Image 1 (cartoon, rainbow, N blue to C red):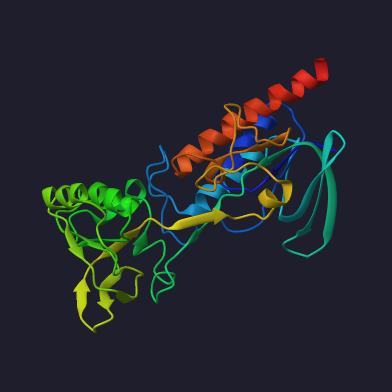
Image 2 (tube, rainbow, N blue to C red; image 1 turned 60 degrees about the vertical axis):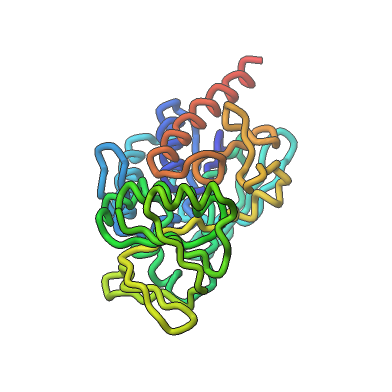
Length: 304
């Protein structure tokens, strides 16, 4: 029996485990595999760790948990999760030996993150995290003053193009056959000197280092760019969210109250799986907050 099962060992899960370990709570941190930013060369905008490689950030986080004897880290992919009376029952397989494992926990934290749904065009997946980028706050400084593109035609893509224009005076919005939705949007784009290219994109051509060399259109012409920003659709990375019937927001995030608790009592969520701006530093902050809220909930149960 664990006090808390944390599913997901990225920034949110590690921070929650640290907080709960310092509360002397018995915790199992289930590490189910590589994080969302595994393809990125560096984590940026993370105070004291700006520019660190994603794998190194996680290694340091795991190392900081070593002094806390009540925290266990397991290479474990959780496959099922259900309520069992006042507790949760989970089953999974260890990712190194494929051995089955079953466990009970008084509470669960979902730190499982999201998966980005990339355009089904050649080059987007291959260049993801290096030449194809999602967050200007994470990657904009590294491509400042370079020729950039933003892919998409909805309001989210327009807003992103306006933001990206802070880092470069040469930004083109690739609408892939779509139209700019309003006169106001067209005025905003003109004011920032953002070009609009409506021709359908055929593929992205990359360089050996993973950066973008050019955008190729379906008519065979090219546009030289150094990086492409996208507002990718997202889906929950773990099927456990749907299996438990937790409420989702209109954007598909796991709804939580101000204490990070979902609509399933005892089930909490933090990091990219929950609503809000998505950054490693913010995910760590949410994980720490969730750890505090979990400890306080368990304490209330113990003294009732």
